[in-house]
Image (cartoon, rainbow, N blue to C red; front, side, top):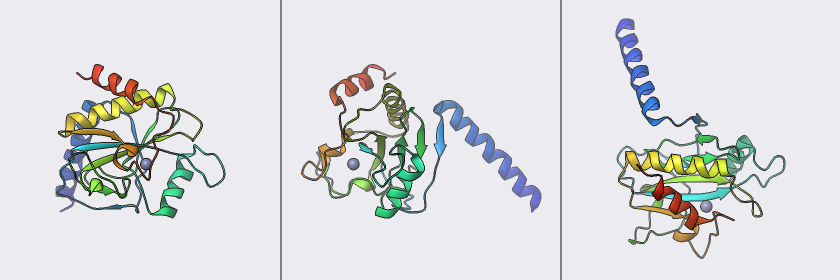
Length: 184
Ligand SMILES: [Zn+2]
């Protein structure tokens, strides 16, 4: 029994390192226990870009304080990108993260959380994303595009225009051009 477990553990670790090597993205795990529902059978076709910061006192760009704030609201995102371009993963891609709220995709889909990956860039109302964040966002979305047939890469404000204005201070057209040009 123990031997069998060891064989499983070894083959699993080989598998995961292969995935990491082909991905070449350094993703820091900060998995949370709230703000999502498990899902083993969803079709991912969208990426939604948001911005957020800690608005509850202390460092506004501290990842742990941002996560604490998410927990207070019962929300999450699959990924958060820090000011230095570090990519934190809060929720497995296979699960429904609660990031989109009441919203709809251009094709009329309203349960956006069930078919999308949510990415938060840490910015404030007055600051723009840093070049490192921009680069990390491009790399992350390109990796996601290799894993799933992505139909839409949209802003939160695109899918919930009455309620949401994020991502703030972000040159979206320049970013989309960069995303297209660097695709290989
Ligand atoms: Zn948002």
